[in-house]
Image (cartoon, rainbow, N blue to C red; front, top):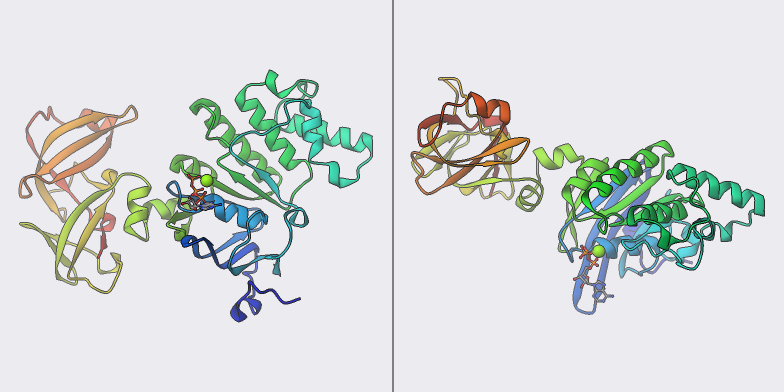
Length: 372
Ligand SMILES: Nc1ncnc2c1ncn2[C@@H]1O[C@H](COP(=O)(O)OP(=O)(O)OP(=O)(O)O)[C@@H](O)[C@H]1O
Ligand SMILES: [Mg+2]
């Protein structure tokens, strides 16, 4: 049967060599509202991909479409090159874990984990062995006889993870599995899930709206906004080479300065002229003006005397952030325009007493990005 959800182009689709899951031009509307807008994404075998974006951007909808719990209106989903767009959820054989643990309160921990195995036709002893393996894997080997109500939130979420993993699913789908937990337990489980994911080579797609969680856990991150993927890349490139102003703003801290272009290698910001590398131009073809982007830690507070883009500044305020300081600066020639500069505590201790002294700073060319 041909797939009515596929466009002619989709049916000729060849996935990337290593792609386990390929999403092609998937669209989903709820009445007039577009929840997913032409989403395409390739997830490699054994890869951990995080979907990161603000509330309402379509993360859960995309996960539900992949799981088969929601039917998309357009586009196709391929697993190992096979179009699975029309398969019911049970035929997709994916492990799913949602935000609330949703364990059965009247079943023991062992029975909860075994529940995931019910479709597997295992003998009783095989099932018991698998359950015990899973409980050992999540670090709760002696909790099989307990009930969920006798466990902490973090322990319950680990049991839910064991239940999702017990049948050895080919794909693990996690929707904010840690968001209900306190920070310490969450950080611990982030590393645990990543360790298990890597050890067993489980292809995983995880939704989060916590950028640090995505940075810690993901091989690649898909940044979503308004039902679209803005950038799909490694955490490092998402942070250091954001493809759009939204990504630059959503991940990490950003300095923005409005500029006018002078020539291919120079821009003007108020009374300042800056050298920029031509290759860092981003955005549309209109290059006459735009916004310059620079991370706070890229601002150099100890520039050489001949450093390029070296300007006189004054410290307006400083914020202690534990592992570093955020200095709030005002450039002498740009009154009223604040600039954040993050420095380590060690660097901070080398700065003279800065109350209102002027100092030299530079905006290194390689760390500047222009968006039109
Ligand atoms: N069944 C539905 N009927 C109508 N609108 C829906 C339905 N499900 C989701 N939406 C809408 O689609 C948009 C995307 O929802 P989705 O749950 O995918 O967002 P999300 O990125 O997971 O957000 P959050 O971070 O808050 O969980 C939202 O505006 C939501 O209101
Ligand atoms: Mg959601």
